[in-house]
Amino acid sequence: MTKKKTTNIILFSGDYDKAMAAYIIANGAAAYDHEVTIFHTFWGLNALRKDEDKMIKKGFIEKLFAKMMPRGADKMGLSKMNFAGFGPKMIKGVIKKHNAMTLPQLIEMAQELDVKLVACTMTMDLLGLKEEELLDNVEYAGVAAYLADAEDGNVNLFI
Amino acid sequence: MTKKKTTNIILFSGDYDKAMAAYIIANGAAAYDHEVTIFHTFWGLNALRKDEDKMIKKGFIEKLFAKMMPRGADKMGLSKMNFAGFGPKMIKGVIKKHNAMTLPQLIEMAQELDVKLVACTMTMDLLGLKEEELLDNVEYAGVAAYLADAEDGNVNLFI
Amino acid sequence: MTKKKTTNIILFSGDYDKAMAAYIIANGAAAYDHEVTIFHTFWGLNALRKDEDKMIKKGFIEKLFAKMMPRGADKMGLSKMNFAGFGPKMIKGVIKKHNAMTLPQLIEMAQELDVKLVACTMTMDLLGLKEEELLDNVEYAGVAAYLADAEDGNVNLFI
Image 1: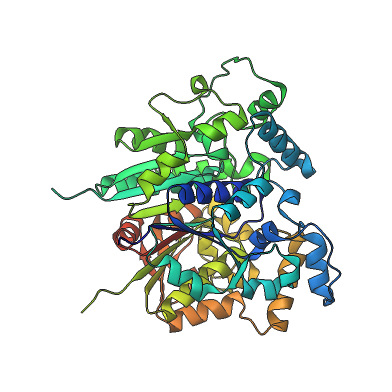
Image 2 (image 1 turned 30 degrees about the vertical axis):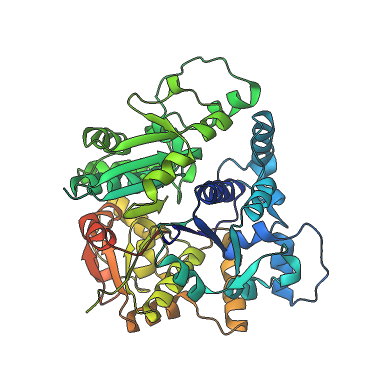
């Protein structure tokens, strides 16, 4: 039996367009029969946030972060030409027009394709994010788990 | 006969400095006898745009994108210290002073070194970019072609 | 004797959070017994700057760059939610609260773990940075040295 090839993506960015790129590559690699992991760290964790406000008791700075960071993939801004939220509307407009997939749809597809979605526990701590705030079926791990996957990986990317 | 080593760079960024880094690494790897591919996606496609206005019939949002995005490598801004266009002037000033290469020169050199320049067809569709607007000798492909190159790659980077 | 696995990180970014990610991965990989190199280029060089003003004779543009770029890791801004310097204060606040490591501490640890810190000589030239301005025990090299390390690398990242 040959070992499966693997793709290991670190999603650091909280931008809608960069997260799209990460998930398009991940889904492509999964269709290509790779074992695929997306390791969400720092602002990339926002892609995994649920839409609802979970009313969790937090410290002051953690509350500030929670308020200021986008709650879920659909709320994220663009890395370029964000124009106070108009850019994401444009992108979503052309996505719809071209029958392409939105970021929430890409994430759903990734879950159907068994892409392993990992949330970085260390940065969750720092930003004050709790497991109840993130999507179901997410795994929780740290940098050691990432390295164990990536050190024999075929396609390793930091996005 | 041994297989050539390969370098596969995804250029997602539309920043002058990041594109410089991508092309410097690519040209270095080509000189190092790697097979090198730069896969241009999202804002990275702007590095491949021609300088001229091609007057192509486009939809409304596509026209907006075409207007707002830099037309070609020389027009791109900086990722840091852009200062409404003053940053790029500074960078170009020091490039000239140190006899280093500008981004358009780096791209020309890449073409001479047979670096494969690929434009991502899916994001061209999204941003409304047409083949006539891009440099000659560019190849057109999607994420599957990228993965076929990258899965056995030596140096894979997302920039 | 088996060859050690290697991790090769290009740190292009001058953001505090991205540099933190780079050093956390680097230190993790070193603890995992990888040979680790961080190749600092463009704005990433600022992470290696000393805190003091070294009063070096420079040209006009080089002086401007030196003034405007952060002098050392502790002065760097965030890639997201920088809020004119308030964001870094928040991050440093939560780092302290969670007994996590600040960027200067992560860099110190990297040096103790024998992570090879390299400064890109070509971009030092461009930005007008001199060896006297950078931390001790930094190596100086160009893209060829990076490629020699990375072409047989296990984990190659551009941050």
